[in-house]
Amino acid sequence: MLSKRLVEKVQQKSSLPIELAMRYKNPSIKYALEKLSKKGVDDLFIIPLYPQHAMATTKTIEELTKELAKKYYPNMKLTFMPAFYHKKDYVDALCDSIKPYLKDNQLDHLLFSYHGIPERHIKKTDVTKSHCTIDANCCKTKSAAHEFCYRHQCHETTRQVAEQLNLKEEIFSTSFQSRLGFDPWLRPYTDKTIEAFAKQGMKKLVIVTPAFVSDCLETLEEIGMEAKEEFMKYGGEKFTLIPCLNDQENWVNVVANWINDFSKQ
Image (cartoon, rainbow, N blue to C red):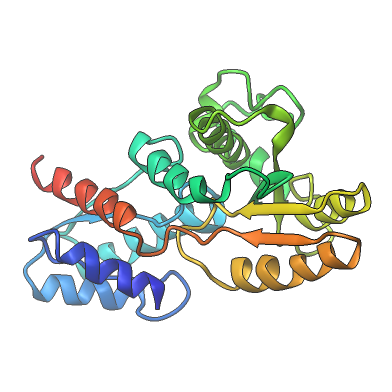
């Protein structure tokens, strides 16, 4: 398990007890809280391993952890790491993972594919109740809504990476994958974008998936297999999926530094 390997490597760089927990699978958050409590932990730092804030991920992690701690460990203090999509050390690690795939003649386009969410989630997380119009301008216009706006944070991740890597505007773009149901989801859709690229004559496509720090079904199967098959079917010749940060050493160092910095507070 990639997340387990990450935790094991981070633990080697920190004296604090560290546990892995899953929101919907095992090891559960309740199990992790129990293990840490038995080790005498009463001041807990939680890092949701999602760079961008979203209702279905970071928000539900925070709510469930608070609920379980209140019920079983009421004296345990909780501190949550905010969305880290714009933190320099994270962006640096992401850029380092992308650089090897930007060599001459290796790509025609770099696509940043983020996990999609329903547009209604963007409206619900808008603390101003008026800013998020989900158009070409709202994510670029400064607003308090951006603290919890998944769409803004995805575009900002792309912008910061592109700026650091000196990417020309015509060589990269952003899309959203994994839509479900009939509600409008964030656009443009990754599958439709990839199909259009191939039909327009694009031959070499590289994809990075910055909504994830560990590879999973949404990256390895949905993108690495299904999207690749579609690209090739419509005329593409070379399709490359950049691995997530997983347990790469620079990412391990970033997470370890966050934990060690917390311990000094």
